[in-house]
Length: 469
Image 1 (tube, rainbow, N blue to C red):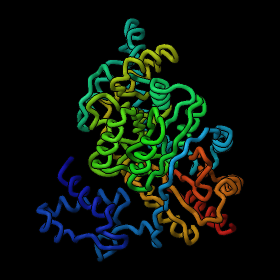
Image 2 (cartoon, one colour):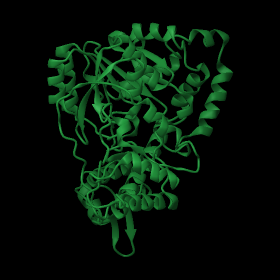
Image 3 (tube, one colour):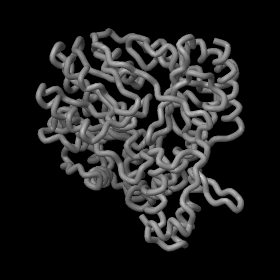
Image 4 (spheres, rainbow, N blue to C red):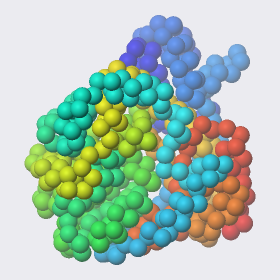
């Protein structure tokens, strides 16, 4: 990072942590230059960058101020601990009814699982695809249909190394998106009827996978900021024959929670004592707002107990369906199972992403993407504070593009979903994120699309609907 970018990130962190509050003036150029030991030119460049990112705004003859992300601050949701019980999973009909109703391109996509495709460098990826296809030999097309394109695997291993995780290439298996990787991991270490510890709330695809594989869920509460409740997990591991855990340690979907490094280490040590494998779903790893990515639990793995799954679908190329798993001690079994099912992801898609990672400026793209998502998060938070009723609570993730709203107790989010859809607005109601249909008064909203008048109008309409409950 350049000097002005580093200084901008320092100020951004003060804003994220609340040291610089909404509406507060940031240090003047002269004061910042003197205090931080940088030139006035560096300060100006940093403030221009922060202004572009939507974190600060200039006022005539007054200086720069932190943007009013929320005029009326909304409190954090309350998800209390509770004893975990085994649960049969039966949510697919509900999930499909929700997903099937948001395909209309004219619907405001607050219920979408993806950010806007306009945030991705699709033309540059197309050039990488053309370049990669010209370089593919007939032998390569066949040879790469096992563990995956070797150039892509090397690029992924390099990104692991930069984040502090040393990885052997043999541990990496390329998959058809992260969901296939997660499926393969679960099938490798479980059999029908087994117990799997999952989050509550959990990404609805987790529940669908368990339902398809005839596995039973053990729901572990997730704190909106701190992640998995380790005390509940420890009690569950002691009482129940849990065969695997499927958790998101960073930017958890739908809450956006990120576990601290200390807590991730404690999670690994707990699972290591019980020798229960962890399937670490880390598909949002590249979407952190801060300067450095949080370490995954995989970084503490000393005996191959963690299967770490990632994807380019949320950060670069949603339609290419290229993901991977660093399978630890289970890598060979995962690869064999893959050969028995889907055989291989698209070889051209793998080659295209490998070329882009080498030559396309992936980190530059990620910075722009993170800035856009953080700005759009601020816009949705401010809009919710203006339009949603008293008693509404909301998460404040440090990355990604989801906000989890907890509405007053009388709100039925399934009914809210139907009423909003009739007005051309989609959302993801809370019950689709729970094997026990909990979170009736909650919903996940996507801020991954550029904020405009239509977005603001949709929030106003949602606020009016919520006021009717």
